Image 1 (cartoon, helix red, strand yellow):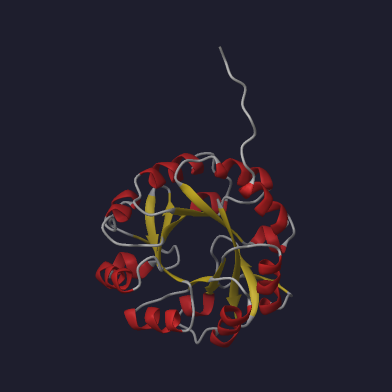
Image 2: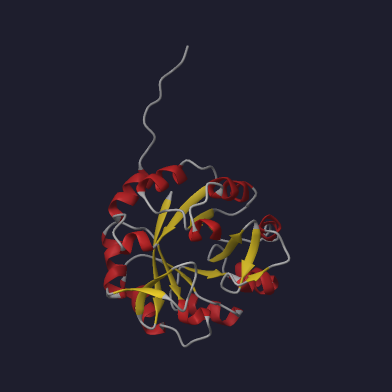
Length: 247
């Protein structure tokens, strides 16, 4: 299972959001470019970067992201309010390994399908779920389509992955998260990456053995040092031990 350390950027700073509240960020006083290089030095194979300023239509953190893409040493999975095929193409041309789309996939799926055909295995669709319903526009609006049907709508498209977030779990621990995500992953034709369920090494160990889950995104836990990235990678990459034979 791949671990995707993540950097969320707002006004040039690394931040984390509580309950998705973009207006109340927790600020981490670290250099984002140095942090990205640190992820690579610790052994990460990919990183996930979200520009929260783009999400609300701001100018964003383009220069920082360009530096991360060019100098971190590992590929970047980039999200943050992509609204057009042109913006997707622009950042792939700038070197982003993958582009993550969210509301665009629900509101204009044809654009995402075009992007997937133009950039096979470089487009990731975010699936944000709250109380069993698909959410869009930064978790503010409920979509008419169910999460399972939303995923199935891209069955024939060469996506790199889906990112599934159980918002219930992000707000408060949810015992049903693994079951819900496992069910959605079972019906997906593309790999599924989980976001919001990696608060401890035990969480990572559990996720590793859930069928059809290919990766986990970790953000806050790396910044508040609840988890060391090197330890997370070791757990995710550990091979199962020998099992006893029963006669």
